[in-house]
Length: 147
Image 1 (tube, rainbow, N blue to C red):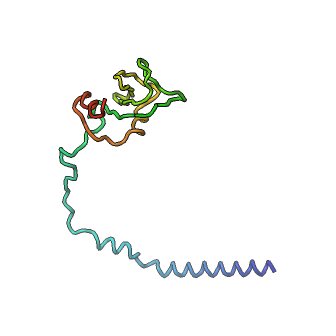
Image 2: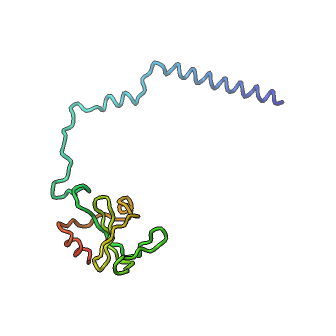
Image 3: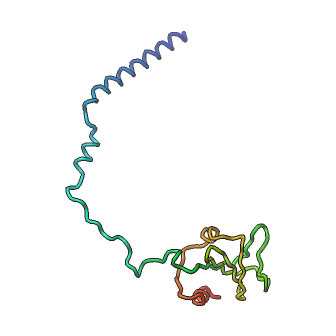
């Protein structure tokens, strides 16, 4: 019984192979329609090159044109399982986090700054949002952020 089933499957498989071979031979001398369409759709003349850059007043400076970036961090900052506190006044929340020259600095509300070696620019970039303003001086930025 299994021999008959196997033989029937082999015959069906050979028939499908034969039909596929015949179809292949019939199509061998034809060019696919996709190639014909692409040849017809090529433009007669090249399109003009247009300057697609923004005007200078709308361009945002790149990171290498800025002296640094900063963001507010109103929550406690927990690194390696411990809450970071200001070395001078003991404040542990309401930080300004500054990123400049591949270093991250923390500034408390009282104005004390400390270098945080456990944070890097990649951490800052992951946690900061898009910049909402560009300031000429550090003091202008502090005023903008309410410090």
